[in-house]
Amino acid sequence: MIPLVLGLLVFAASELPGPQSPKEQLESIRDLQKGVSEQFQREWPEAKTEVERRRVDNEFNARVVVNADRALELARDHPDDPTALDALILVIKTAGAGPSDRSERAIRMMARDYVADERMGDVCQKLFPLFHLPAAEGLIRTVMDRNPSRTAKGLACHALAQSLKYQAHMVRRLRENPDWLPGFERSRGKDRIAAVRRKNSETLEAEAITLLELAISEYGTVRYGERSLAELAEGELSELRQLKIGDVAPEIDGEDVDGKRFTLGEHRGKVVVLTFSGNWCGPCRAMYPHERKLIEQLKAKPFVLLSVNTDEGKETLRKSIESGEITWRCWADGGSEGPISTRWGVVDFPTIYVLDAEGVIRFKKVSDENLDEAVETLLKAMEQGRTP
Image (tube, rainbow, N blue to C red):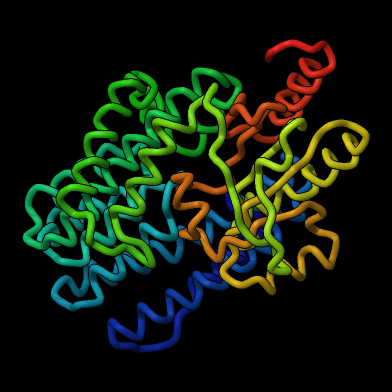
């Protein structure tokens, strides 16, 4: 049984105006989902305990399901209307990797009816985080093979590389952190996660590299957002080849919120936590209190936390700094596809690197207690005059 408050939220999320055209229905669903997302962005950073986070997640997922069902119904009832595919895209963007099967149902409808649609390249770019759904990877491969549009083929090629790279990362992540497994099984399905874990991370990365090279050579001029596929793929190849544990981190030279230049290299001699984050990202903001606490605890140590901020406007970052929400120095990268993030091949947020005093990457994509342990390990190594 759904709790009373949650039930009221679901009821509110399901309310739509009277008779509407398919286009009007879709706009109404989008407006409702925007409200759901805005509430989640407000509440998630305030959730201090696991119980509170679970409550916020459950309420969010319940409301998303209502809106996703509306969009699926719209696509089913009006398959020949131009808004039908847009409705299915909305399902992918909102239900995403959540615990319901709505994304999988939308993917099956797309595979049946819209493989040749020129918009499917953009759809593929939204599918790669759904690494646990075989239907998602299957649809991307089908679009790459059968869609007549060069742009759609190129975007599918790049998306498939990202999907395989993401799967490789998750295989390693779950192998190194088995205590995370129950959470992934709960949110994405035990059998699905088991299938991913059986894959070989080296094989996945090898195919991802081949696809990224193909994206550069065959589809490099295709645009996605503000960047060409060549620019995006080159950054992701760099992440696979030059941003591994044991590699020296490449230089970062950019401006802070006040337009003053600073570099990563000027912090040699300190343990560096380097984050890629932004206020637009709920999980990123949820880490801010932990990051402030870490900085305060280690203020007498050779330690610094730096961030590549991916908010589109400097004013958002400026307000966070002025309010004390962010107490560390940030490069203002101008968006998730900014030049620094692109060069480092960052596609999921937050992404965190921990560097030793020589600028060598020692830990990658860690958070919370694992982040604290990583920093403490490197500081102890410095004190003892040994290599980590």
